[in-house]
Length: 182
Image 1 (tube, rainbow, N blue to C red):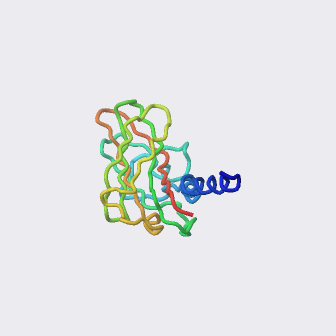
Image 2 (image 1 turned 120 degrees about the horizontal axis):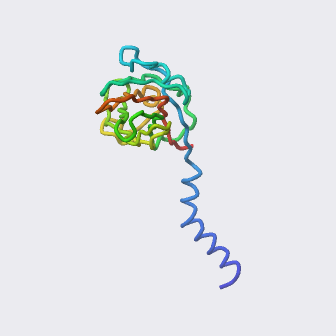
Image 3 (image 1 turned 90 degrees about the vertical axis):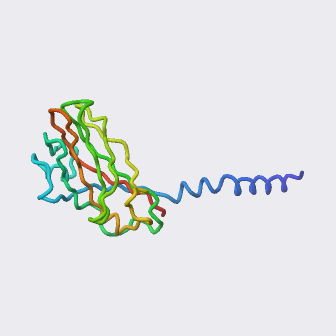
């Protein structure tokens, strides 16, 4: 095989087999928002505003099992950061408890204020301040079939304390991570 033909063959192989992987990686981006509003009538009893103030170092807390705080606003500014489709939506919570291994926090997305989603529980609450894993809510039973930026704007979330025995659960922040095409 001549050198020119070999070069063309290598370019063809690269284009057919490797370019799709490079193209997909380069055409996606992530952006993170956080919940910055809550419903005063559905809130934890101690410092509920600390859960939405944007700080990871201030804490809302409760000692009541099943206590709910409804987060009803987030920092998405209203202008999409990209033009491509939303491919993934995830939630994460920063929390701790004085009863490591006993208490938990459950996040329940509420889609556009009406459709309650599945429960996503952070069981590994310790005494140290830690973030949960990212919970993928993209294909939740009640999630939109096709996510739009309007759904990000109106996404709410219930934060539910799990305290089966005595103790206190603390929460400082709930983040939303969105993966989208450029």
